[in-house]
Length: 190
Image 1: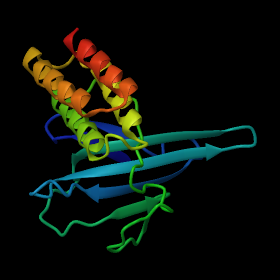
Image 2: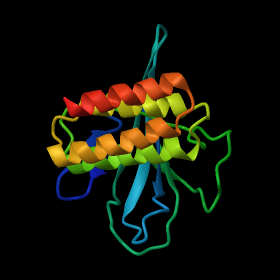
Image 3: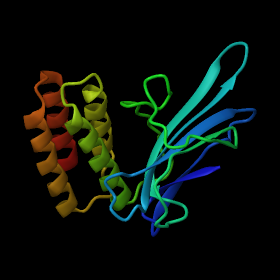
């Protein structure tokens, strides 16, 4: 199974179920802020358990829905290749991908500028939803990680990102987070 990241013109993929003898779960959610209902978030977890250790891979992607259509937005959950009927349920804290759940994946290939900016904007929006919450530091450090790997961006794009980072720094009340955003501004300028 492959999760697609990007806009359909230039995209990357994340393979799920590729680890030998693994189990996996993934869930896809339409982007409620996308008026054309073309984009979706996909969250995945893959794991292999043995007597000595457990290997786990976590991923979050944002990209075009595989079948771009005007259908009613729905939640799709697949466990080990079998779809689980989620209906129109809203998942609470007992669901592994509840509110505030964030998963990262390190891509082997370099992101396109469009995918990079989309990922940056997603984490920026998540941070702004709760800049003083428990996940604020995670979002800030994820943005910093993105900024350390932004060589594919054009100078104009880097300038826009630096302006957005300055806004995030001003919103942050935690000194560590402010410093992380300051380091991000420095990295994006390099």
